Amino acid sequence: MIVIGLLAAFVVFVQSCQSPKSDLDRFGVKSIERLQVLNAPPIQPSGTYKNPFGEDMTLRDFRGKYVLLNVWATWCPPCIAEMPSLNELAKQRGGEAFAVVTISMDRDMEDADKFFQKHKLDNLVAWHDESFSLNAKVRTMGLPVSIIYDPNGREIVRVTGEADWASPEALTLIDHLLERPR
Image (cartoon, rainbow, N blue to C red; front, side, top):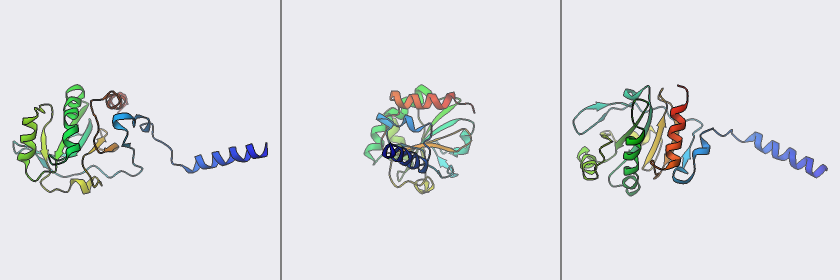
């Protein structure tokens, strides 16, 4: 009895020392198993990004909706592999409450634009980071990285590495977010 009591006390002590899990951690399965909820996420980047038509955009332009920001490049094989699923996600869930924003880290905007045209990624806009500073601003070293921001521009979750954004588990995550009160 004493051993069981000590063991129970030890388990309670260990659990109390661990940081509480977010309600979103449970979505990190299968195709989005790399999903992370950061304890102290960086603020949403404030840079200006260009599209092939020369238009400027900032992430603040999307305030009021959930945004999946994907930082990628045409020379990155995992980035290329996940781009069709991002296009499908934008087709299925994009609208007034949710947007998929892809920002290329390629040397030239033309590289991303040609890639989008060749692969018929017609539900996405090819944005480009001319300053090449976005990775540092979102505090990641590798590509791709996908970060979901809430309607106020606060980071909710991120996935570093390739993910299938059209998978049932990814769609369930997005649906869960869209059902939350704003």
